[in-house]
Image 1: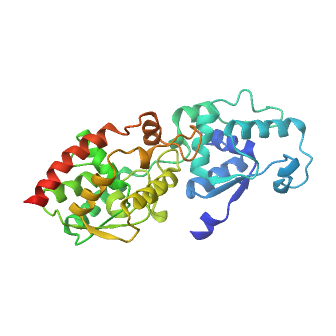
Image 2: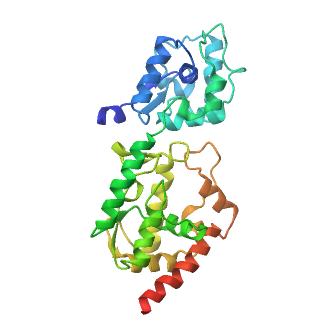
Image 3: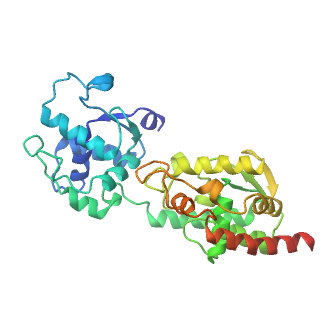
Amino acid sequence: MKDQYSEPIQIRPYQLLCIVCAAEAEAPEPGPAGLLAAIREFPDRPVQFVCDAGGVYAWQTPGEDDDPDALRRCELRILQRLDLPPGAILPARTLLYRVLKAIPTIEDICDPELVDCTGNYEACVARGISAIIPERDPQEALAEKERSMEALRTAERVTTRPHLLMCSVCQYGKGTRPPMANDNLPELLQIILTERPDLPITLVRGADWLMCAPCPRRVPELNACVNVAGSGGLSNELRDLDLLEILGLHYGDTLPARELYLLLLDRVPVTTPVCARDNPGLSVWWDNCGARDHADAQGNANYRKGREELLLLLEDKANA
């Protein structure tokens, strides 16, 4: 597995569009079909764009720098639409999300004299990323939900990545209660509020199994989160680190649940310092939560509501 995720496969920008077409083609060309199969096998493997760009990007030129002008124009236009330079490396899933968003049609990009297209690019765009990379098996996610919930009910100690504590407050303020299909946060809060207020919680890195096991956007072999157009783990990691800094804690620290939540609710009255993002839509740092928080200085209203409600409940238990 390490080799698949550590060594990028090099492709030309136009080939990425061919991969999208191949997903809808009845008989795709061998080249695009092979690339599509490689990405479907390891959807988050790194992909590097290479092309005849010249200038300061000549270092990544594949082979001889003698591509036809029409091909060079096509490839540079693709990179311009994607807001990426030649030589850029991104996980395949992240890159494909970007393509589907930034290039809804190839009418003004692809030259039929250069590329013999056998697919239907626009049809694949309409279907979305699942046309290229299949969704996680729902039955597998359901089985993981059951396994992780059994582990949660009997756990002597719970593990979670830090910013998910804030997510659980947002969910609570929104009115989300167990059962929850995509994560185990409402169930964790219910256990804390009704059964075990001092359940030890250890803060860990990554999309930890105990809380995230059933998530359709979790990649188990990488312990990674691929929500938010495939790159959710990046912004989430920064949220984890920002929250740890605010709380004065570190990965690996363990606190009783009530103490940890009261610390969170005291030091994080609004979500903005941790969650807000002002990056443009194609950025790997953009996500819905970040955009909403950037637009409202008070942050997520559900968090504020959940914070008020949980403070009353947890402080009452502390004073009991």
